Amino acid sequence: MPSRRPLVISLVVGVVHAAGLLAVALHLGYAVGPAEYSLLGAVWRYGGLVVVATLPVWLALRYRLAAPLVAFVVTAGYVLGMELTPPGPTFRDVAELERLAEPTGITVVENGLYIVRYMVNASVWTVGFLFLGLVEYVVRSTWHVFPAVGRTVPELSIPASRRQAAAVATTGGILHAAAMVWFAARLGVTVSGGWEWALYLFGAAGMWVLATVPLYLLVRHRLVAPATLLTLFVLLDARAEFTASVEDPHALYFGGWFLYLGILLVAGGVEYSLRRIEIHRRVESRL
Image 1 (cartoon, helix red, strand yellow):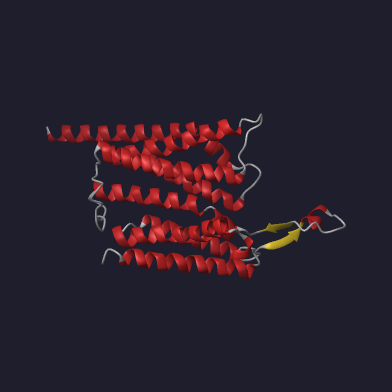
Image 2 (image 1 turned 45 degrees about the horizontal axis):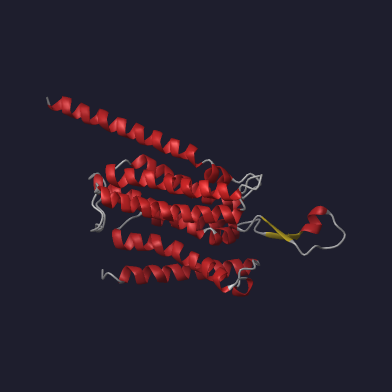
């Protein structure tokens, strides 16, 4: 397949995906038309819907990576399914809920907002799909029991050199940190005492470390467990916003990132130990 063709097909799928979801959202009564946003806001939301579909389709066509595409299809299907199956979204004025005499003009949506939250959080989903693709790429490049990838990345050998691993891990860390800091700011994650700047500085550094460490271990030492868990954390964090509540799980992920880092390191240590035991057994069997 020509090098540009996968990208063109992926972009077409991304545009169709965005247009389809927006059409459904407008049909259901959500205020997601271009008039509702500034130019930057519309580009961010509509562009996010395009990119979140384009990336996994491109990875599938270019490198034959299936996991990101499957995750995307399941996610998009879930969003549409929740919106289109009963009871469906219900729009109520706050006055009705609070039993006020006069309407307030403030609308509360029940049993809905899946498309809206999926659209506004598309950057987080995209990072999760990207990490999932990298994990699959390393697994299929390492173990011959799995089908080989469609083509290899010339700039990334597996196991990667220290320079390659550092570049991949640093880039992934920056993408993760940018998405999660924005996510925290959008959700209004804060701390009492006027120390928001310290929280966001601490959280931004932690988000970078939390992604950089497992990604380096993945491409340099082929330790799959830490990066797999990281990807799971990202996707579950985004998934939790579909049913957002007062107790936002992202606040723990953002402010308590060191707890998640500890889990990733323990998983990496267990995987490394199991591999050492297996290697030792193979050596003994040959003696």
